[in-house]
View (tube, one colour):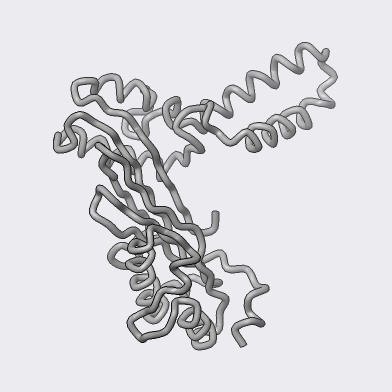
Length: 239
């Protein structure tokens, strides 16, 4: 029965991106094994679901009640697929990305088929010239950089405060038995925390294409096309 499988872990699967670079939707569907992720029935399910998800702008509650080509709701089709394949399958993360005067740039890594992959990025750039070839080149490279460097936010002030607190706890735990005076420990801890913020903020990361420069510096060098990174989303199976 499908219900008996739902207590198991589903850390494999596929990520799909649908859309036209002005409006894009990204959807993660999870399963238990890489073998199933390459199964034709699973792949066809993800492809169809991706189109429906784009239509409902990544509203999962609406998605579950939408009808598929076979006339069944997504929920019912999912239960049927679980019973047929014999693994836990779940609808994971999803997001629809669209901003005024912006363009989306897509990068997919470990592509299984068409627009299905194990790692996918959408980066959104605002510019006064969305058709500029230099902008298009930068946008593609930015999405590749995000795939490789996995930033947590565009700027350090946008990093989730709970992640900062967790990192702070880990740093103090690491230093508490160092034997150093309290004021020295605090200085070391602040230095480590600032490094954590820099390493995980897109603008202060070293540019993958030119590791001597930071992303923010590369953007300033392209001031003639007035680049502003508006948003990004990065999904990786298993994360």
